Structures are given as C-alpha cells and as structure tokens.
Image (cartoon, rainbow, N blue to C red; front, side, top):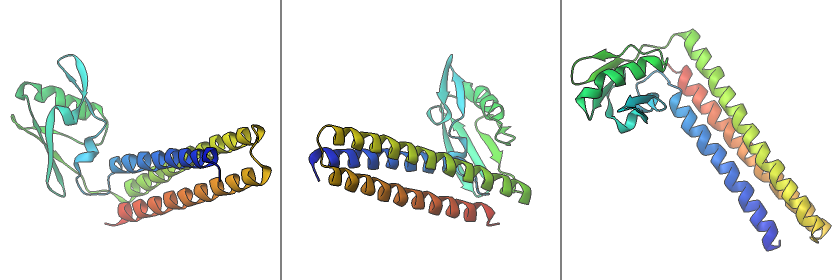
Length: 187
C-alpha cells in the first residue's frame, strides 16, 4: 500500500476511535442503578456569572452505591450548584446540608431500566452513524486517490480494508451496547 493509502486508513481508524470514545463518555452518563460521580457530568453551574462544569466547582464523591456527595470548593456557590442539579432534570432531589449537597440515588424501576436500555441502544446507533460517516469519508478519499493515479486494484484493496475496519468498530459498538444493557438490567 502507498503512503497515501496508509494515511487514509489511519485517518479512518482515528475517526472511528473518536466515535467509540464518545460512546464510552455517553455511557458513563447512563446510570446503571449505582451512584457514580459521572452521573453529574454535563451539569453546568452559574458560577460568578459564567456557566461552569460542576466538576470545576465542587468535589463529587460516592461514599456508597446509593448516594452522591457534592462538596463545593466555594461554600457561597452551594445554592447555585443545588439549582443546577435540579435544572439538569436527572431525576435527583439534592439535599442541601449547608456545607455539602447529598443526593440519594433512587432504586431503578423495571420501566426505568428498559428506558435506559433504549437510550443506550440509541446512543449506540448514533455512534454507528459516526463510524459509517468515517467510512464514507475514507472511501471518498480512496476514490480521490484513484483519480490521482493510484492503481485500481490498490484502490479496491483500500476500500476492502476500510470496510474491515468499519465492521470491526461496528462489532465493538455492539459489544459495548450489550455490556451496558446487561449492566443496566442487573438489579
């Protein structure tokens, strides 16, 4: 394979890796019944007039599987942090205890578990779309290389390698979705 073909393949693989990384980050937000500091990722707090990620305003710990403790770095921001958690619509009812915010993570109902599995599968499908977009971009690149003088058989080989890469990443997504489904459905 020429250097251009190898570059094209490497770029496709890198884009597909990014899709998998995004999937894993999104799955951290889908709770599986036990408390996890990542459940609050994405919550933004109005901190001195600036919308700031909650992780930058407080320590977030899970002392046990049913509870999250949020300890603000600046005690004066506790009300803003509490408001941000409520406004995030995560299904939590934060308890302001003066210096910390205690969040009891409710037990998941069967209905909620099924809802979370659907959400995980939807995130998986969106990730597959990202992988297919990376494949399409790489195939366009391969066609462009062929127009620029790459031998036809090498362009065909490159397209086959891109498809193998796509299949590998699609399988990886399926395994991650299955593992998340198992995790969510385990009581």
